[in-house]
Length: 198
Image 1 (cartoon, rainbow, N blue to C red):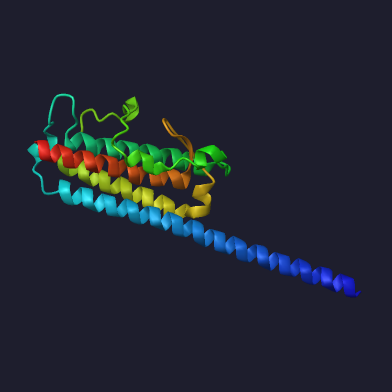
Image 2 (image 1 turned 135 degrees about the horizontal axis):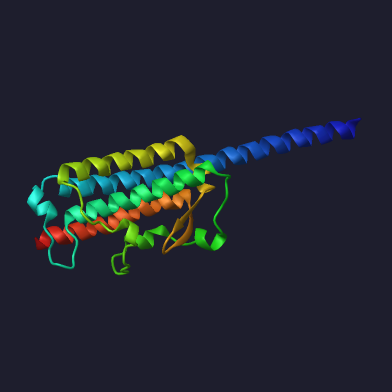
């Protein structure tokens, strides 16, 4: 009888320990997603602070024939973010799954480095960008949708969804949201260059 009591006590203790570790892990995951959202907001605010004051003509002016205008950059950022949201929504509608270990080790911060140049995929090329006010409103609306998606599903679920990036491969949902921030940072640097040139 005494052994059975110890066995039951051990089972209860193990259950409590597992619950405590799970809660701690969930808090860490949520903290990581909260940091990603803070970085998203910080870059977004800086970018808008530089873009909002410029007039519509300067917004659409290209520094050269082969370089994007601020309008095209904003439109590209919006197209990419919409694509990420669409793919995450599709993944979240399915069963949870994790990307492989190797792809979890790829830092999304490499996207922010402008030394590495890649050609944008066809689906996110900024052809015929909208007028400034429409572009900015759409850009803001898309960001709210991404943040709402993160809030609705939480860190644990985002970690268990796969996003197929055309260059980085399979990323977790939280890494895909992080990618959006670093991608915006990359193009924020580009916008600063464009504004110096025009």
